[in-house]
Amino acid sequence: MSAESDIEAVESAIPRDELARMTDDIVSALKTVYDPEIPSDIYELGLIYRVDIEDDRLVKIQMTLTAPGCPVAGEMPGWVEGAVRGVEGVMDVEVEMTFDPPWTPDRMSEEAQIAVGLF
Image (cartoon, rainbow, N blue to C red; front, top):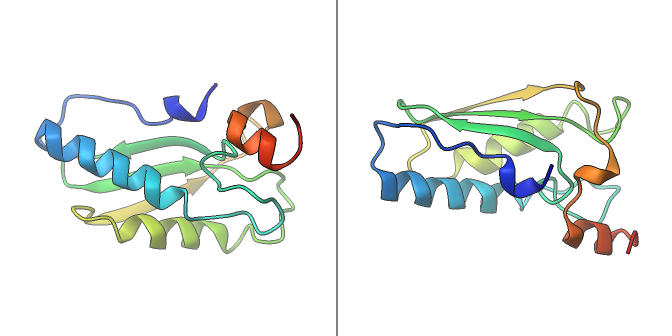
């Protein structure tokens, strides 16, 4: 699964052009959050499983970590929430942490694979 398939388009009360802008801005915001142990952002690492933008502009994010015992497990959702909350048009953010399915390196984008030396 590529990182580009993480945001699902559905019918929305938000105008299409604004929804597209918000989607791009949310992805950009997610790309500002880094796992401190890996030289790539969480979006390119494939840690973001799902992003839903609700009609009331609540953004629901389902994400994971590279490992359940990650030292920043308690902090990472707050970093993600803070980054996305700054996007114009976002009213609220909910971050759900999941480990099902478990993260594997094949979720990483080619860019992230190069950054960590897998290529």
